[in-house]
Length: 133
Image (tube, rainbow, N blue to C red; front, side, top):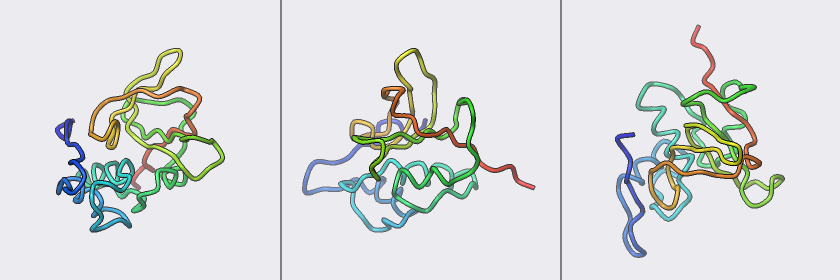
């Protein structure tokens, strides 16, 4: 939550904080104009010693950790974007849901780190880290 408000800069400039998020993915060195929701989740997990996917692709999280039948606060929610069968997606940390929306905390939500909501029908999976043994 301490990252709340980190935002993309206007065209011609790049927020170095978002560039740091990309450093945890295959987009190392990219600016804040590249999609960065997955980079933010990778960076956040790295701060607490949990390995992410290393990918900037939101749907890479579909193969990470274990699937949950029901969401729990803080789990990773993977969403479709545009077309459920496309490669496009969004990923963030689950906050709560209501009858129509899922509420996430994440990066690149209206071009900043913040809470935002999405239609429930966009949810592809809820993910949780594998237990350490």
